[in-house]
Every structure is written in structure tokens, then in C-alpha cells.
Length: 337
Length: 154
Image (cartoon, rainbow over all chains, first blue to last red; front, side, top):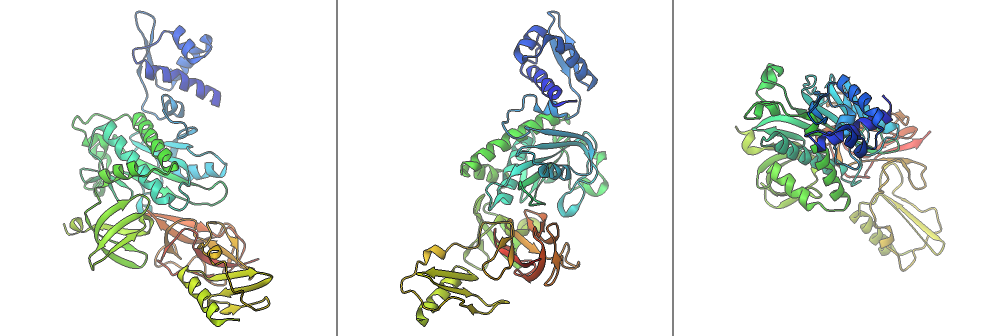
């Protein structure tokens, strides 16, 4: 499919997201600027991909069903972003969306370029542990992001991404999300999503790749036994156990993240900081972590996106720690249980 | 030259964590460099301290440059930290270091890992040459732009 086709499909589908009650072909042509003669072939093309259209008694076309696939043109339909998702690379199965994103970075693709995969066979999580993926049930994507702010992009972009994702999970799936510092999202104490902010190569242009993995629609049998106690999916945590639409979750996350990135670029951190703190609940907690070769113990007085953690040290005094310098982070009350 | 002036400059260098300082005024040049592989003090230019010195001009800390930037006169290049993080010399605690003094590196050679926000980022040399100094201890927290390695260009 050429880029042109893809754009036409996006325009076509966008109208049906605005008019769920349907549109007659004439209005559709008018609104999209597409040639009326192209409408039927486009519809047929979409039907081949699994979209289902019906016609009502007034001759309106109604989008009745859509496939459980994250085709680029479908993700872009109704995506309210200027930059994130400006280019979408859709893959059925990949070793890792991160690898593809870094290849695209080397090709010079812009900030906001998105890689989406239905299934990942070598996805990376913490300590290179594979993200357990089942086809079409996870949301797996990577985004090329400008290194902004240049000095502290790793912490700021991780927090912005995690906060956007937590909000999206809460609003779209309707389940309570919590950020577990630095890069996990938990629902009722179990891991449901993770964020990786990675840099690999400093060839020009320098960009970071944010990798996101979300367990969306798996049921309990999809998890291996050793993960059942510590991992969950959005669907499993919903009261009605109904599947969550991955395309909505993705678009909403991108929109939220773009909003935060705009604020960051303008030097405004306070709203992000408040949102992050609401999701992470770090302030006031007793923690232990390492900073460089030093063991640190104390209570978090302030958690700042820009300035890091201000800690009331167990041994007395207050100290500031950059978020990037913190490793082996634990809540001491959770550690003891 | 005035020894007290010199002491003052050394103090400024210590306060600002400067490894090297070069001052040029009215055709006279003085260069100070802290202990390392190089002599403690090198003064290639005619010696004589100007009375009034523009100290603030030399205050900024290591460069914002993330790529290997040429260091002053010794012909060495610096590999600086492209991000804030924790510095590891090897891929895992029991593995060999990526590089040590004397190792030859090319642009694509991995020289260390910087861990940030639980992600292990491989850092590449981005220059050709031989490592002459590892500036940071394993496991140390590093700042953006902090020198990690000195490289003698090939």
C-alpha cells in the first residue's frame, strides 16, 4: 500500500469516528475531498482488512465493526496529535519494536515516529527479561522522541510517558493505575504496563526511543505460572471483564504524552509533577535506594520531575538526588512485607 | 609571578571541579592542569600573572558536548556522558570491562553502560583511537557532559 492510499484510508475512517451513526457517500466524498469513484474501492479495501460496513435505510454507510488490529491508517484516524504518530510503522510480529525504532532513527525519521507491533518475540523489559506478549492482546509500541530537555531527558521523558500511560489506562479501561517508580504501571499491586526510555546510538539525529508495553486483553491463562501473581491485564482488572480497545488506548496515550511534551518544551513542569505525584504517591514514603556506590535510606519529602527526590535522610539532614541516579529503589514498608 | 594568585586560581579550579584551566591575557598565557597522567602544572607560555583576572569567564563546568570533543593542547579527545546515569564498565558485574587503558576503540565500539531509569544504555566511543584514561569509577553516578574516558586519536 502506498503512503497515499494510507492517507486516504485515514481520511475515510476519520469521518466514521466523528459520525458513528453513519454517512452517505456524497457527504463522505465532500468531507474527505476524496473522489466519489474511489469510495467503494476504499471501502472494499477496508473490508478486506476486517472493517465491517452496513448501509441503513437512507443509504448511509455505517462502520459497524473494526478489526482488532493496529494498522497505521487506523491508528491515525481521529488521532488528535500534531507530531506523535505522524508516521506509523505497523508490524505483525517483530523481535522488538525498539530495534525497528532505532533503525528508523538512523534513517532520519522525525520526532513522533511510531512503531506498533501485534506481537513481540524478543521484547525487552527490566534486566532484559522478555515482555510476555500474546498476539493482538498487548499494546506494544515505540516512539522516537527528541532529547528534551537535553540534560535530563531520561527522567523527564520516562515520567511524562508513564504519566500519560497511567492516565490513559485509568480513563480508557476504567481501572485504577499507579506508577511504581521509575517505570512500571500497576493495577491493584500487579504489573500491567512498563515504559523503557532508551538511547543506543548517538549518530545524528540524536533521539531517544520510548518503548511501551501494556497487557490489555489477556485472560489469566495467557500468563505463565510465575507471572500470575505479579502481572495482570487491563481486561482482567475490569469489573465486566470486557476487552479494551487497543486503538483507543494508544491514541489517548499519544494525545496525553504530546500534551506533556508541549509543556516540557515550554519549561512548564508543575502540572506534570502534580499528575505524576498523584499516580506515584511517592511523597512522604520511606524508601531505600542506591545512588552511585552509596546506599541511601530516608523519607521522600519532595518528588520533583526536574530536580529529583528531596530526601530526609534517616541519619539526619536533607539531600537531593537526581532521578537518573537512583537504582534499586524500594519502599521500606513494602520491602518488609 | 605571585604565588598567592596562583593559589587562588587553584582554589577556584577545585571549587568548580575544573581539571584544567587556561588563561590568556595581554599575550601571556598560563595553563594549569590537575594531577593525572599529565604534569601538575604546565606553563608553555612566558610566565607572569596578570594582576586582574577575568575569573568568571572560565567558571562553566564541563561542556554540554555529548560527542567526543577535542581537549585542550594535549591532543586527547574526551568521551563525555551523553546523559545522566550510573556508570558501568562492563555489561554485567562478573563480565570483563568493555575497555581499559590501552584498548583500541572505533566509532562503533561500546565503551560503557549508563543506567538511567532502569534502562541499561550502551555508550559508544564515536571516535577512533586508544583509551588512555578511564575517568570514572565503576558504579559511580555521573552527570551530563562529565568526562568518562580520554582517548588518544588514531
